[in-house]
Length: 280
Image (cartoon, rainbow, N blue to C red; front, side, top):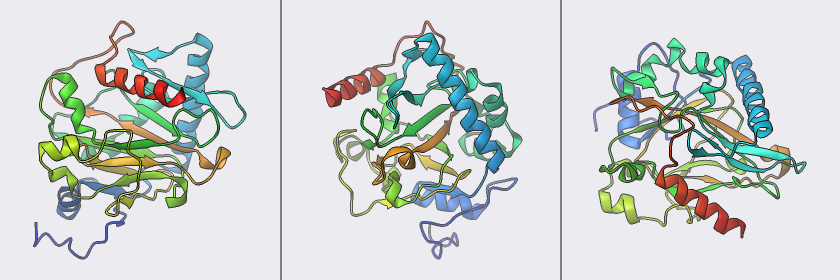
């Protein structure tokens, strides 16, 4: 990949998302397996998403939901001891403002990274997912252990394929507030390394080669699903430790919508077992 003009770019480069992905941006993503675009969402949009998350949460808590379209909700406690949904799936199916946002034309260059015919999977896979990490007693989602997202393909009966995870970050997150850690370049690893380099989800130890993706509200990251990554626990506690992110599902291939009658995927059953074991 030499000669692409990115050798001078540090790993913490903040790019600007324009009308198209530039050759330099594509080369950076291809080499390192991730890229960050600065302030893709405006402050008012970040605030809107926050309000919508809370409205959806209140509706689901009032309904006593534990799953949405077969996908488990992570329900913990906030800093005041109140029920707090920490992973919400399919949010754009329950919020028109969020649906309009994720379908906005500004994201067309990102969708085209997935494929010319890529679509927003509002009702597919896990839909538009909101993660809310919080470091307080009673939290069920203070961190996330080392994993690759590409291995999920095995649960669908196929070998891991190239996939890109698109994350919109809603809070300022520096290294002391936990946040996303990546092992750059590991998206080119072989299948055995993808499976066995680290124990999935139970390994949390810092890696000497990891980098921390520090974000501002409205930043957007793209990372290859075959890349090893984790979310570190915040060194802060209480409300100051809150870190919120939204993952946008851009999909190709057959349309496979979910409904409230859908079964829970095997990889989510494994995750539920791990959370119960940790809470025991």
